[in-house]
Length: 163
Image (cartoon, rainbow, N blue to C red; front, side):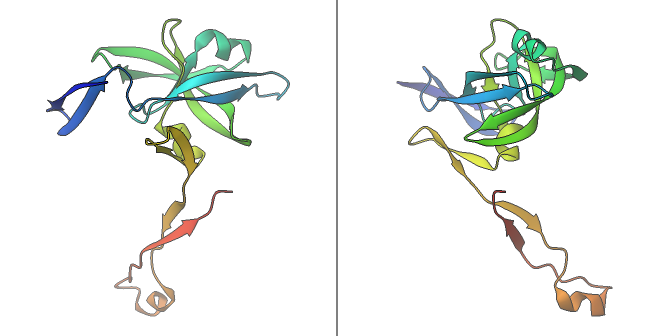
């Protein structure tokens, strides 16, 4: 049920709030660096989260070690210092390394925007699922630009299919 919306003046965009409308979970398998251990968990898809976040206990069992810390703003507006690491993850049969935050015990596992981009996935909010998307690379110049290096001719984007 939609409960309302408010204007977030810091970001100049409408933010919806309610009882979970448009939210869904998706299984993700986290794999240790050796590939010998793994754990599959259901994680909330959160396109507003920069990084994914998984329970610290799960990451520690898989021997994932933090390489740094970041300050992250939580959904309630508070800021918290969190450990940042890298874990091998598998979504829909595709394995990629992703950055992840070491979550506190009460926090739900999240799949954030960084992971969605790494897997070339986007959200279908109507059907509540992840769907493949194309990646784009900007092409700096076309073939004739080499003759006129003083003014490069920009020409659109080059699609890169999901590899």
